[in-house]
Image 1 (cartoon, rainbow, N blue to C red):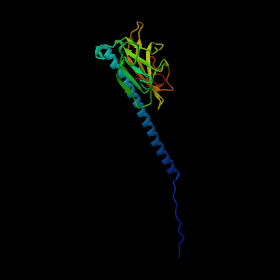
Image 2 (cartoon, one colour; image 1 turned 45 degrees about the vertical axis):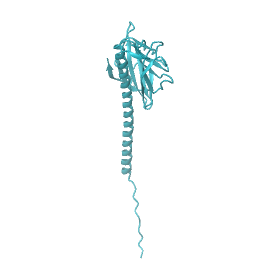
Image 3 (cartoon, rainbow, N blue to C red; image 1 turned 30 degrees about the horizontal axis):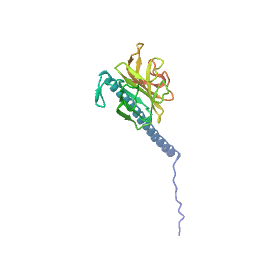
Image 4 (cartoon, rainbow, N blue to C red; image 1 turned 135 degrees about the horizontal axis):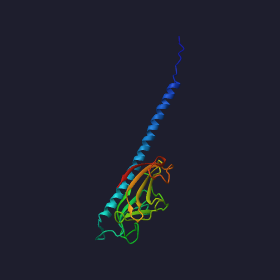
Length: 219
């Protein structure tokens, strides 16, 4: 005699389904936050590298360090500088630190000498905050005398921005402020903010417009 056996098929209850969705959502949000924090950390490290190189060339100029131009040791007539987006010489994700032989302002090949090239794996853009020039440079001739094709802001500051295209976040860097007598005081400062929300006055008196915050000040 055969018995009619019924198989029981079990599914998720509504409560179990909601708990599962909540767990998946939580794990996804943690992953996204981790990625964003990692990208912002990379942006901060890039900015700190730039500030360190700016201090480096300022120190070279202040100390009047001589450079070897084809066997001739001399202080570079055009000082020590950094060139951004220098055409085919340097892609947009790199910049160069150079010694300027002084024949023409800014980095010029082959008379000027590259000290080192700094490259980044992340999707960064370096821009003159007050101009749309494709390439630009900033060089120290002495501690307070600079040569640059960057445009001064309305309050006489040289401002550079580093944009991370992957997370729409940016760093705004003040490289120096020009005094009424033409000297540039390089009290560098950095602020971070979402790129789309950044205001042209984001580095005002308190440096805290639209979420921007001064995180570092270097003398």
